Image 1 (cartoon, rainbow, N blue to C red):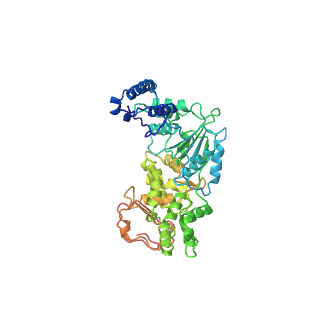
Image 2 (cartoon, rainbow, N blue to C red):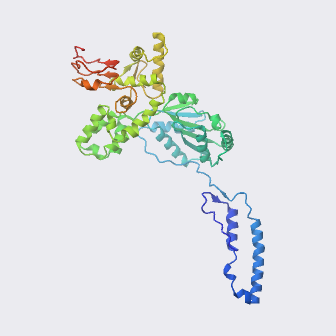
Image 3 (cartoon, rainbow, N blue to C red):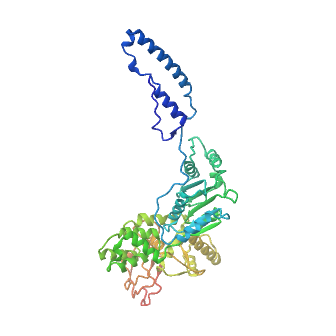
Length: 482
C-alpha cells in the first residue's frame, strides 16, 4: 500500500501537524517487495509477514483517522514593509525630513505630497517607505498605487493582498470592507496612496480613520491640490522643482562624464536650464545624450529644446509628455483646456499678467454661459486658480503667473499639427526671428503668436481662413500689417 501525498507545489506553507502526519505516512508504507512468491510457500515467513501487516494496518487506520484536517496549509505572513527599488533624490532632502517628521507627529492625521507630474513625488514616497523597513513604529505599512481609473474594489484587493487577506469571487464591497476593518481596527498602520487623481472614500474602503488614539497615518501623493482638500489632509508638502545645482548634479549623473568636456560643458548647461528643474525631463534628456561626444548632437538637442520641438529627443514623448498630458486630460472641461493652451502663446519664462490674461479670455469668449464682463472676469480668475491647483500654472505674485518650460512645451506639443488633437497653434514667441513664418505655415492654424521678435514685415496674403487670434506685441520693427 503506497500513499502519495504532495503539498510541496503549493505556494502556501504546510502546517507543522500536517508535515508530521505526512512524515508518518511515508515512514509506515508497506513495501510491496515483501509480497513475493516466497511468502506463498514459507509458512514461517508468511506468519511473520501477516503479523506485520496486521500491526501496520491498525496503525494506518489510526493514522488515517487523524488525517482529517480542516486546514492543511497557511500562507506565510506578508512582510510588514515591502522595500521598493528607487533612485536617489537630488535637492528633496527637506521634503523627506518633513514627511518623516509628520509620520511621527501626534497632530498629523493625513499628509498630502503635492506637485506637478515628474517632480519626484513617488520617489519621495518610496524613500520614506524604505526607511520604515528598519523601524517598528507601525504594525502595517500599506502601499497602493492609485491609477487614474482605479476602483474601490481594486484598492480593497490591493490592501487585502498586503494584509494577507483572501477575498472570494462572490464577496462584494461590503464583505471585503468588514475583513479589512477587522484586520486594521487594533493596528497602528500607515496607508500610502501614490498618484491619487480623485477623492476616495475611506468609509467605502473601510480603513479606520487616523486619530490621536490609534496614531495611524495616511500619506497621499497627487498633482491636484483639490484632491488634498477633498480628502481633508491636514498637512501638505509641496514638492518643488530642483534648483540649478541639484538639476546639474542629476543631469551629470545620467548623461555621464561627457558633460565635463570643454566643447560640451556650456551646451550641456543650456540643455539643463531648458528643462527648468523637472527631474523626469532631466533624467530623460540625460539618458538620451549619455556619452554623446559629438558637439553636433548637443547643438541639435539645444535647438529642439529652445524651439519646443522636444518630441524629437528620444524618450521625451512617451516618458515625459504622455505623463504630463494626463494632467491636461483630467481638466475635462473644454473651455478650461483651451484657457490652459492659450497661456502657451506668451513667451517662455515671461510673467503673464492675470488681469490681461483674463481680459483676453473674455474677449475670446472662453467664459461659457456668462452674460456680463464682471462675471466673466470672476470666472477667469477661478479658472486660473484651478490651473494653479493642477500645477499647470505657477504663481509668481498675486498679479502674475507663468508656465513651467516643460508645461509650455506640453501645450505647444498638444496644439501642434503632428499630434492631431485639439486646436492648432503656431507659437514662435520670443525666438528672435527677423522673418515671419512662410505663408504655407499659416494654413489650418487657429492662433498664432509671434510676440517679442524682430519681425519687420508679414506675408502679404497668407492663407489662414480659420485664424482667430494673432499676437504681434513686441515686434518694434514691424510698421505695417497687411
